[in-house]
Length: 249
Ligand code: IPE
Ligand code: IPE
Ligand code: MG
Image (cartoon, rainbow, N blue to C red; front, side, top):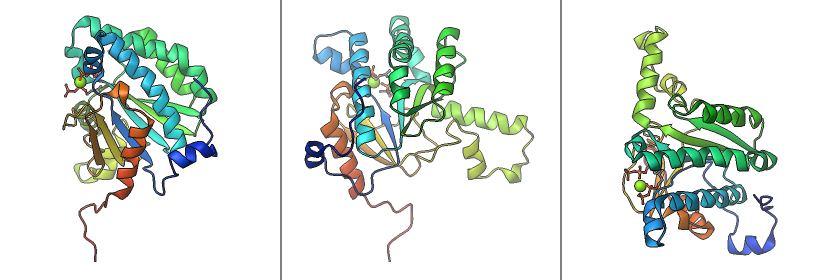
């Protein structure tokens, strides 16, 4: 991965003027790899690889645009329903990305985290994920949460189970407490959720945390979602009026 762009790049500043209040935490539902592949005469795994390449570009842009935390939806608990060949391909991509990119991510100050369940993954992949998390734990330029084998409902169920196992009294169960039992315990809620490929649904992504997130949906397939589109999404976010159920005087 190329050294991340420095924000004092003047040519870049003209094209992408600094944003006044960029979202702190952006979530991305990286959808449309399959449709992109089909439209470009490629197979689905080539689509997933192209999507992975785009992630690398998105990380660089995130740093440049002042985003501090990015959560990417890479594999849902429902994606196990796909043909074994595709599931295995997606697992392999995760493993290859760690092998290939970890050193560079670490050098660029990216902290890796994982949300979801590691249990069902092959032990070798689990080990690599845990190693990557440990290696990068003190980095703070960009926090990258990887949602892999993640499902929002599963997350709420595991939280409920742990509360019961720990004999937490019913009256102590508050929204704040429950938040601490989610995989995202140490993260602020997402401010903006981007979904590529035009579907108007959450597909079980951060359903607890995104209660007041702003959504941005674009018909562009994930591998083609470029820096200009990303900037456009952030710009639109900056113009939204977040009321959180209150009202202006
Ligand atoms: C998103 O692309 C990647 C994953 C869900 C792993 P898809 O594979 O869902 O692509 P489409 O939606 O079929 O185009
Ligand atoms: C959501 O995409 C999951 C990821 C991007 C990892 P899907 O393609 O699985 O979602 P649906 O099936 O269109 O709801
Ligand atoms: Mg899809």
